[in-house]
Length: 342
Ligand code: F6P
Image (cartoon, rainbow, N blue to C red; front, side, top):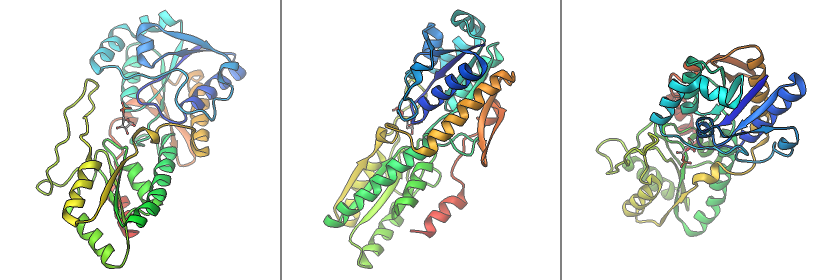
């Protein structure tokens, strides 16, 4: 078979490991031809692709980013292309099936492609870990490691200067990275979008900590976290061309508020895209490799319109539409557990 593979949306450590795995499994075990589509759906629409050989994927297991490139495409442009020209796009690239590696937006587009005549198998990806259909996505573990290391490092400098450090971590709609890195790093405040925070309660927690003789505090805040209504003035920004809300910097804002109300020095640290760059952890390499392997198997089984997913320790397939029907948010019992260790 001639199988296309594309990586779409924000990049994430482990994408290259999926590509490598698809090429290995496809070529070595099924004598497939693998076609790498450049820059995600943009390359699909514009017909930009190249054949991938075993040599092309040498050394990819450890490499962050994606050798195919990725791009965000405005939703209307994507919807138009995938609904009216799906079969035509596949024919132009000469592919029998497509493996689409990406987050919720990518999987929704993949579902549309399948409904409109292009056989697709989805592979879930996002450092945010917010895809409901899978226990975990690759890239998440790496992001948590990077964020945890940052918190560990901030503790010593915070203590030297008796400061409150506010670490802003990625997570637009969900606080998984902040929750897990906050717990692993022993942050004293963990603020996530799922649970609007009360600035007074955060100040009180820090004051009590200093009153106990502690010399610093670390607050981990997700970029999408926001104050409870009526507790602190903070407006999130408008929506951009890709349907993403622009954040106005909760880390900076919170740090200024804490400094003002506590009368203690505070510094914001915005970790940003460092959480998405660099080599994947061992766990992410293994998960990405397994997803690639199973995606090729799904193509050969004719299981189109399905997404591979981790459930417990096994890889399953489930309908894409079902997998992305809702966001996987942090449930209350998880943030309650985090509170218990503060
Ligand atoms: O969805 C993954 C993610 O890393 C979010 O955590 C973050 O808000 C967003 O992508 C950043 O996107 P961009 O790279 O387009 O700025």
